[in-house]
Length: 551
View 1 (tube, rainbow, N blue to C red):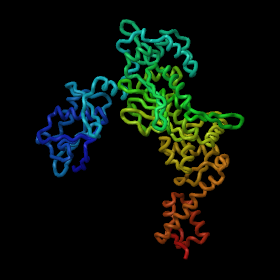
View 2: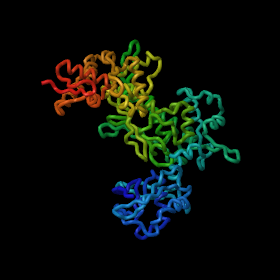
View 3: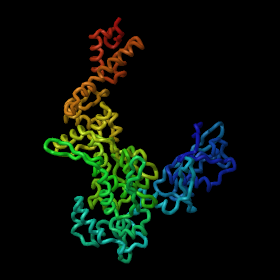
């Protein structure tokens, strides 16, 4: 079959010349290289510049190629081989999936594909720590549960254990932990692991939570974090530390508070604080970066206050299965499970594993934009929390509704209200993208807000859209705002129909439905209104009816 060749090599596309018969070992290594990255396609019989030169005679029979690859890789790599004609020459397209474990050749060669600084791809050897990092990102191993080579119980700090117990009380953690002695506490939280001889050895989780600072520096050299304050390109604060995690969180929060001014609003009899950055969102974002970073990679966790946002970044991309498109709805998949579980039991992070919801809530409830993860890539996770002024009317609306309910608004409802506030009018399909769910779920959220009196629905069926309700606009002192939004679509639809008639001479009811995204009944009402004003003239009856502009 013929097939359009890719224009150039990339992270997922590799070209291999076969004019001199590519050695089987080179072919297998190239496929291993792709599998240990994102998978992709290897085009055999194509030069590096994308010019097809054809397959060698020895490779014209492709039947055994998939078996050869499976036999020479460990674990066996399953590939799909297709014969393709390019510019009249036979070439082979070999499709290789992303490996769900670390793959090597049977000769023990580990390779991975990466992009160089100029954007071109290359295959490089996978060093032992890179193989461990890859396995951790796939959820195959948990480095945080493993003993740290060279560590002893003397590397654990009694003062940090006391800090841990105080944190359980402060954050409302698992109070059963407070009844345990040191050895039982270490076992319950996975701070130590027993060896075959019965001796206890600190795990990475143990060192990170209650380790001595000097021991962390020597035994966990990848652990480091920084707090930086940048104002108009000037550096006002810039310090790096290697504290154990509970002390690190205290230190970061203490240093951040002076840079986090707070206003207040009056809601009924109560005064509600309005900080520049919600402290629950700050704590969750920082804790997530420290817990879920890749401890195989050098590099610090950065907490950076910029002119327009608080940015938190950590080495190591999102774990396998988590993407920016499912961040809000995917099941928790921690890279360091033992460490994450320990921090949840202490109470530092959200115990349901839905810490991302806490970060979103901390932004949206103040009428600020959603957290921005767009700078995240394969090497680091970056979240930016915009620090623009809060919308005080929106904050008052959220507080009043949550007090009426006696509970927090669901995160999907907050996202919906924020979207309508921003866009003025949304449909279920538009909201579905924002809450990362299907249109039916989005519609249920919008209808629930409609029943609560916060949102007004307009239209039926496919053309149904939603605005903030008249009561919300009135409470915000913007009575004209509702009228503008509620009346805008009707006026717009009238103009769409009249413009269509001017351009095409006539219009049918079905065309009105398609043009304005209206139901049949809505289209009838619109046509009736335009006829009543003398703007349209009807010709024919029922299904054969069409309408023209009046003379």
